[in-house]
Length: 167
Length: 428
Image (cartoon, rainbow over all chains, first blue to last red; front, side, top):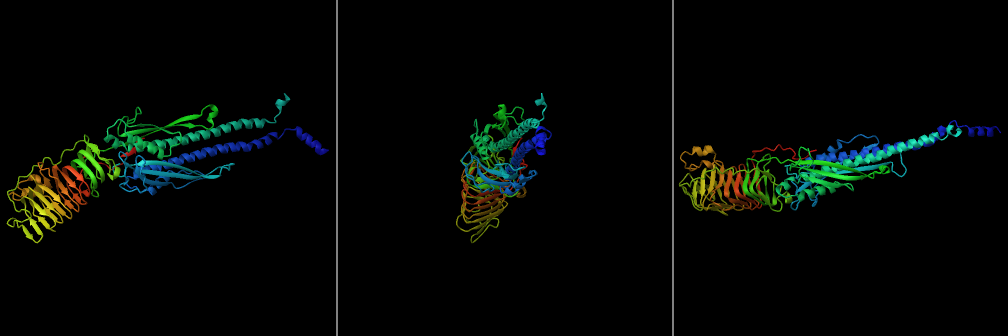
């Protein structure tokens, strides 16, 4: 009888109700907040990856004039702007230099100086520098349906001068 | 009233309000993040297209036209190569830049590109904003310094059908075409300039087919040797057709070894004899042909002058090592027995009269080291074999035709000096 009376009293009392409600909604609010942070962080990493690739490609457009076989130097230059983001592992950027005609034809992996591609007037020979930046992104917290870790990749492509020493 | 005083459910109301705010924040972070991300991509695209377009500036300047298709093609190709996001558009290619107030406004040595995109929004659609217009602009320049080496190959027409003209390591001599630059194949890897009124012909003048860079247009450069005064014909005729006159200056003949002496020659033919010929210092004035193959010719302080029907034709296996007289050498010839008072012969190795238009042929297997000028103001110098010429002075002629072989300019000196800096650059 005492137990039934106690339950009756508890059902009428509303002390602690707020705590219960809060405990119910708190995880959802945390998830929303962390989700917003995760999205923002992912975009930030994406922007940084574009920056890294852009930096490498811009440097490459100059350095190929001196030495077209500068993939390693271009990668190093690109890596110089790699930021530090907790939970994100930035990989070493990769760079390729190929020669092609300015109309996009006759691409060749052989990056010689001077270039040797055969182009049809009025196309000229150019070096195409492509830098790929990537990072392994780990989410702040696990999300259903989304891998907790995945690779983000951005690529920038620019052209450098014809490598004849006059650019 | 009692119902309103109850606290049950109040947290849920607060949570709902907070959730809306948090959701809005997340929506903002997604949409704004996406816009910033896309903007960065568009800027890279604009930079890529501007650089690609700028590379075409010299070619577009050389081919007058209302709109340069090569530049448009290059920019659009680069736009595709840089993985343009779906919906992005290369909205403008302006050579020169059309942005009012830009310091490079209208300059033909700069090009601006504008990339635009209507970026779809994710959550801003709730507020009726389905897309957000973004744009990026870039400007790249291709500065063309007026490099006009004073030591150069100078010709009214430079016709490149093969072979190459290059600077010796560390040298900065150049090539100048006063009227026409023609190239079907071959390569000029020395500073290459063309009279602003000159024209471009040929299938690969413009880097195509390994022809090297296109010539840079510069102000007209006059014939650097035009003030030279041609020598008078010497009165001494020491030999004809390879037969020596031993009565002068210790000229000798022993087997196939010759030492020749200065004077006037009808013609000399050294074809196939395996000769070794040494020219004693002085002026050699040819009124006929000087031919040779498989012969080694050398001479110190000598000038070969061709007049009338005089001509030079070399064939395979020929080696020449000539050095010209200096002004002091000629001045020291007080009796004029050696140089016939030809003061303009200083620094001249091979000189063909302005009235002599005979073709000068330098054939296969030819190996010439020339420390003086080769000057043929009214003649074509044609190099049609796998020979080589190394010159430390200038080659000046009406037309230089290079079918094969190599001309190496082993000299420096520039009127306009290139600082070696990068000429292609993003302006902003």
